[in-house]
Image (cartoon, rainbow, N blue to C red):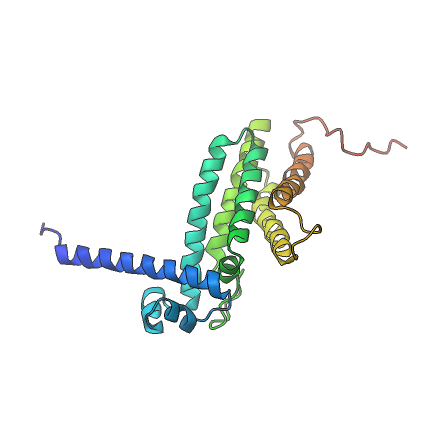
Length: 231
């Protein structure tokens, strides 16, 4: 077996470093310029040409996906840290919702950039074959973990087929609520990040908990459930 080519390894590392540097610069440019920043704008901010970005990312959709993957990776780090301190599945879910909202609020421009359709490709943001499918799949998988833990702890069974649809539906609610929240002007009518995280957690977790007895028959009905009509 021939020894590894040192020049090839160095070139590969150089390309990885260059791509990471371009992505960091692009993120800063979008944060400053807004989600409508063009590839020309981003390249100018990076003091290079559009052709360099196309070489490393293919097109704007490719840049959106790369930036979205970076956002998810950072969020996963936050979620893992929060999960270690969570005292219950509900706490774990709240930590995930809070991390999602914090990510969006920390840079709404970057959030909108990675979740909008690429204007130069026309790719729908939520098309299963489109640019951002992996972004939302990853977030959905994160949200699924506390619910699976809750069901396993509560019944010893897995997630019922109907509840398996919950994670992707849940991220739709989190996304819709979060984006409406971001659009609200500052003022008393805009909930705090903490209050919204708690509210969404209640909508998702407490609502789904009420449906568990209907599927599994292992828990007493919640005291908040309206009594059945005996007439």
